[in-house]
Length: 453
Ligand code: PEP
Ligand code: CO
Image (cartoon, rainbow, N blue to C red):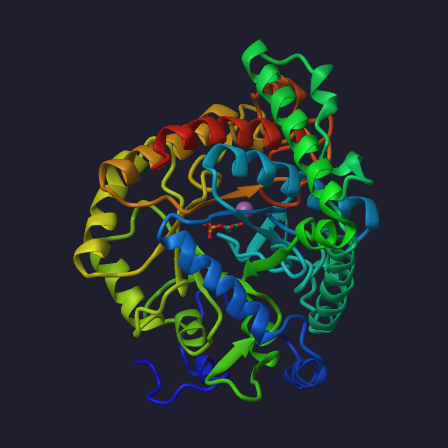
């Protein structure tokens, strides 16, 4: 039973499907107390702004692009890695604006995507059993007793790295990342050299030309306008998994109702922790941020309605985001019922498609991968279903990186299973690399043109 009165700590009395086994309660409390005193990473007015954008996306007037690593790491908190992530999100968003003729809200899986749910609490290698790797907020990936020990000080290290990341993201965004004077960020000229089907290459070239003309035109209007128009806004998101971390930074703010989780603009509840009577739903029901919930193929209409009632009792515009991750082969069968139920109940929902987590495969050699065509197919089928139900697909959610990794197969770059060990860097799920991600955005833009109203 949910406690009658919500507080930032009321989740503590409820079952947690991904409980972290901290061994020293006192040390945990010392770290959490310090985290409580530190300044927030984001502000309530930014959170209200993204919520208002989400409200528009629910009505088909904006589109959301959410993407980043499966597991962000502290060691990847480096300028080139962060800039590469922003660059791919920026470029994809420009392509999607072109395809959908709608503004695109950019949401990174960064500045806090450090906690991972695991299907098994331990991992065994060569007869040795150790705790699984639960993300850099909890323990370290190396397979040794010392590295896998759960360490509450990592809650503070995670907060600090989230702050460093966000500081750099904000500076690049404010500094005119998409400025005509920095064409390296938005120009897609390298595609001229890439081995791409002709129609895609033509489209890339046309788009690049149009963008550059548009930016030059804006510049001709006057410096001040350009600065305003080319300011690139990025929002942050992560799975709100470690509730010690989330709740320590959850507070009431002056002149507003309710509590905000100030580690992030847009947190989500994962597929493994969305139990109605669980700690995560309890924590999330009390915060004012927009809330995402991942839903897989086992989700029933009843689950969806009850989650909506608990998490968004006022049916507030922009509040509830349902991130569907059905798998390419299940989406057509599972989605229509959920969309119909939500519609019948008069629910305001922002539907986002995560085409990654339902399409994970294992190769013969035991490597976790995903195929470009499966990922694209789930997005396309999801668009089809929303069109047929007269609903809107309001966004897409990808695991991707700005780096040249080899983790997913397929795409014009032609990555095969044999290529996977060339540069497989993910500590968790396989990500689209830079080229695959950009190509994906073009394919989605083409599909969006068909749905344009
Ligand atoms: C994730 O987004 O990395 C994840 C674990 O997803 P899901 O909860 O949908 O399995
Ligand atoms: Co993942």
